[in-house]
Image (tube, rainbow, N blue to C red; front, side):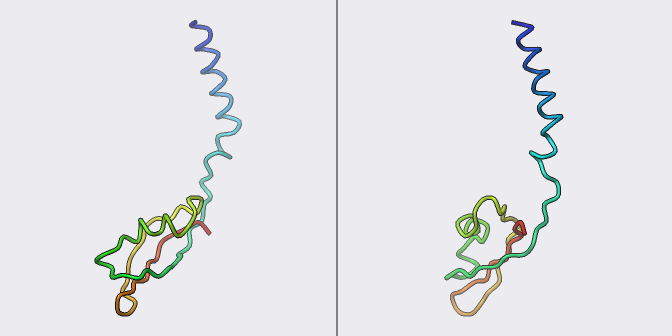
Length: 81
């Protein structure tokens, strides 16, 4: 049993040594992305709406809301370029 655990740990160490840099890319570049919402900033969460607006692979974050006319808001988030 002890040898199976050691073999597993050794295999995982080799796997992450070989493929670790490609699994976790630190070279992501983020650009601003915008969309409009049909409500005021007080009533919406741009962060939550961004999850429905863009796919998860674009990793929206750091969203801010700005008024854009009556009963409309402009959400700006950082997304993967």
